[in-house]
Image (cartoon, rainbow over all chains, first blue to last red; front, side, top):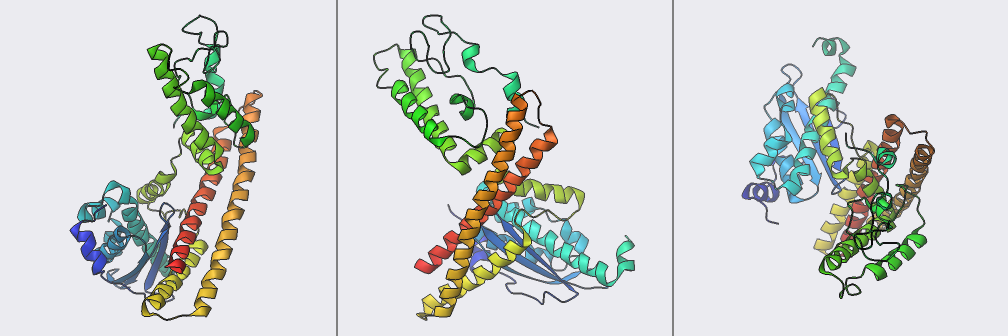
Length: 137
Length: 253
């Protein structure tokens, strides 16, 4: 199977690889896996408490080229977005951008899951530290 | 929802009750005429019905094997080479279905996945549909792989990466190799445990089938409950299997 140019670009030159302090109150961590292929993906976001804007994102993925490219792209996309905007990223957006073939769609699903899980983790931390703010929807 | 095997049993009599032999007109068994022995046109049935079995997960593999060899001999296209053209085609189709059915049913995991498929569950679709549900409800997705297993997998992958790096540089780190080896053994043990866990759900499932055949059908909740447990075990098991494969590759290269 041949990868698209965009996948190859992210694969050979992944953006935002690394990790952040999991215990920090501003950091949300999403760790997800796909039983289909055994891939595991960790995506972390650092959120500005005042604006809810994602200021930084890091990832580390063990998996195929498409999984690495999907998570690399996900970190690029979430940066600068608010938490709510980031939640609107759909796996099919990633499929389109990277021209993923049908057998690799689960990689994009994994990346969407990772974004959701990271935001979920961050929200949970906010509720724990500031219960009043979390209730005001 | 797709029609379940359980409702299918009640509603659909096996082919031998409904068809008569195309050649002599007598009632026939599923694959041959009982009276004249001629091969019959294939009827689209599931693999369990093909062997005349109820859709149960505990099955006598030795008996299945014997049936398989008996049927292969009788259905073999070469044996039917001198017969009518239609009959030859039927024997070819029946033989190929026989092989698929046998290969699927003899393997405990393929058998389970096949039964789930008959029940409308596609294992590959699980993760995607859970994501779609999370997106729709705004809730956090129920992860197919449990978080503690994921942590373990992630840590192990970091160690594997170190191992590959060491090998590239020509370094040797016996402590790291020993640690990875230890984790691999633990994963293999877990892999085995999951098969045993799966077998306890087989029992529950088979109990539901027995009950249904005795005229007391299982509710859709009861079926879904066992089904979900089996899906969960199979997913975890696949995950571990893939991981052990990665460990082996990293150790060998």
